[in-house]
Image (cartoon, rainbow, N blue to C red; front, side, top):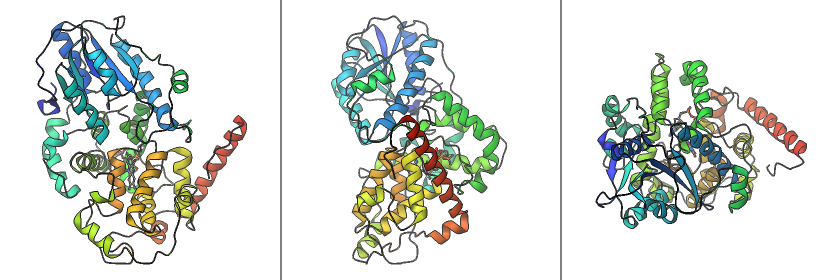
Length: 467
Ligand code: FAD
């Protein structure tokens, strides 16, 4: 059964006749453990109709560049094959969802969609809900507990959301069964022009920002995510709590890009990890469910989730009181981007992100705090952090990224002892890094990564284009 709290009618259109049920895949870009897909399969079977899945590919997805598009297309290609194995056709269309979905919806009896929490995703759904003369049903599948059921308001921190989520977990941490399809749609005639799913061909048609190269050793797709999950559960979970803050130990799951693109469900991960009877699983489930769903709560309820204005009043006040404090260092956006600060640890973290699309979790906190410390105003510091995070992280442009950056500026945290520039915002320094792990060893590790990238670029006759 799909829990009714996951399902929401987005308009009041009456059921109509049609040739198929349409699932507009927005956020949950996978065939496995996808509640919206299973809901759509069951609705199609009840009507004895085929199910068509459509994906709208836009050139100018906010903040995305070649790095993100390649990862997305790799995932979509696999999802198309997995759907085809079940007799379901995935059709990819070029253009904004509110332009391309109505054409397909005109011949559908019902339209189903999933749920992303960013403002443009919400706006597309709202626009479609008004435009369509078919029922539009949203099925929330990228969180363990539906966001509005977990809480009806913006939460102060993990400590206020945690008990609400934990109370609901027994109901929601339940496996999802996949229903066989009654009427295949593979050979169905569909209106409008389809994009052939060949990534190179598609990329040559799209006017995508090309300034950030794809990451060769981090391919997108559900299979790769499942491989990482197995490796993590078998080899790293045991030491997760002890080693996760040490970036030289590679102790975390590396699943965040796959979660970001909906190529794996948090439910799949949580159920797999829960089977391991290890104490460390609780620490991991806290990050995967409570912290991640706190970020969804932030994006859902806070209209300024990606801006300094989204901070709590105490944090804004204290930052304002310290607005004129002299900054020990001042860096321009180019200095930040090119990793040209005086701080070898900050530079190494930035270089790792630029080259590999990933910065280890503990360093992300330090990275954000230092941007605040060495930028003339907190407003500018917030903007720079969002810009770099969204541009280079494979998992960027995500509620987790906006909540993580906001955390560096006091969100979901409490007041600490007062000091220059930060006021009462929690402070971090390089001595703290050295106490936690071999910070110089980390810098050497990133130098090796940079050399590896330079050698690969020299071989292919291209520069890395990066610091
Ligand atoms: P693991 O430790 O293996 O955790 C498993 C999953 O739990 C992660 O994939 C993630 O979905 C979730 N998770 C872990 N830590 C957090 C956290 N602190 N908050 C919320 N969810 C968490 N995460 C992103 O997904 N995208 C971002 O753009 C992003 N930017 C960040 C920026 C800053 C400044 C900060 C402080 C944090 C940011 N995070 C972001 C949160 C976190 O650092 C990453 O999710 C994590 O490092 C990803 O690595 P992993 O998948 O190996 O995590």
